[in-house]
Length: 305
Image 1 (spheres, helix red, strand yellow):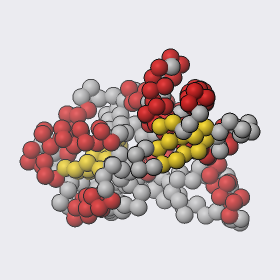
Image 2: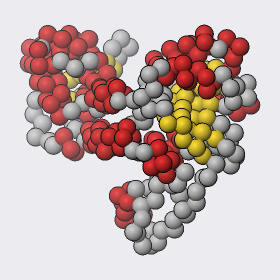
Image 3: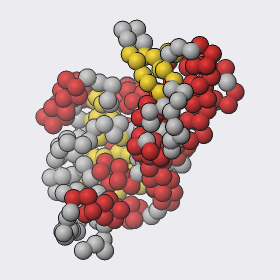
Image 4: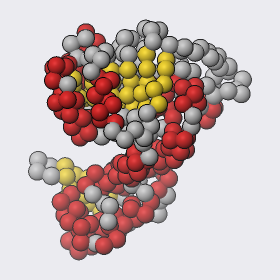
């Protein structure tokens, strides 16, 4: 069962699981409304006016650091509700995340500024406001985030505060966590050069320094390097050894040629990039009523038997 099955996903599920038929439930959620403030000149001030209502609210942002900074800003702007505002991201411990979820459900916390980490498996029925402060990364994320609003069937509002600048920011975030073929080729050359120079496993710090010294490696920051190392490990091109002090990478000279597309991690990154490219222009330009139709309906595959 899912509320976000595109035709491609549904066909794959049918094939993989031997499903004979699909039942589609086209139920609407007429209690949801859109507050379209895309491109608003001062979205922090507008957000503060929403939070000041003192109703349950989730504010979705696209980075951990922003979740912390924006929660701090809201506490400063609305001191009377400072104790009722929290941030949530994957850097918090499991116990911290659980405690925030419980306090939000019980009404001790009224506003959570969160990354997409706050959502799956969390069912709080009386959320009155969902604020998309930054642009989601796909149509499915847009549907899922917005759909957490008003599950008690009472009036609820999805506020759109993202803008054109978010397109560039999101693409940058994707490029960091899902390095392109070109960046992976450069990283592979760096690893090969280091190994040939030393003949021994190299540390992450040594790889970072080598990348900094190589003009073609612009954009290979630590997170991107780590993601690339994971792709190469999956493909059997390198080995990783972790000791008490550091992670070391050992280059393999005698491996056969492999295709990047053999890496699930690489393919998932490409899929994320393609999903965002397909989504972002529509998310910026579509009329509010079209956006609402993606929120108050499930994403159905259509045309399947």
